[in-house]
Image (cartoon, rainbow, N blue to C red):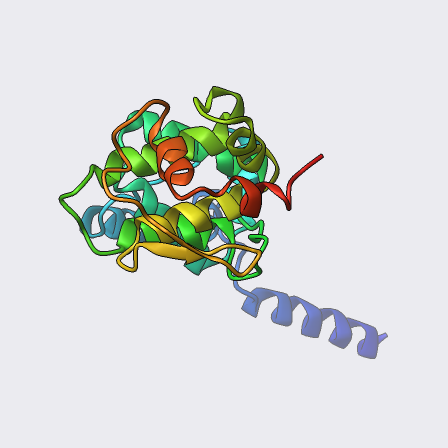
Length: 218
């Protein structure tokens, strides 16, 4: 009997030495403190860092944005920084369609890299580069709105990366590009004067009908 009372006394003494459970307010503070710290750091970054130029809108666009690697997201933001509201709208349409990673017919690069090359390339005063980029984005986002030959419309619809490669090469510092046939195609002087939109004028003046259209024919 004495041993039983000794065991009970030992249990009572041990229980007396245990710290009482924290009050509900203390428990809430312990749970919410990490979240407050994260929110504080995020707010500090938002104040000190510039806001991103390109912010996805909608679930489909957000999913396509998150699927891009960080370096591709940076390229997309660099392109968006050079565009007005209408141009960004075309870029969003292209992003939502999931074709920024499509490769050109020559295997030299993807659509996004060709668009970025147009943005980061050397400036020229011979024509409006921003208008050319906007026309290219509009043609890729809405091929049926291209005002030019049918083969240009089909190229925009079926191989937008190849369209961007050809436009970038012809509008670039070398003034030309190698077609999929291996032929060198040169930019003609005063190509921007004539009927149709800028893309059709640039491609049409270089006589790309045979070389480009042969790979996207139905």
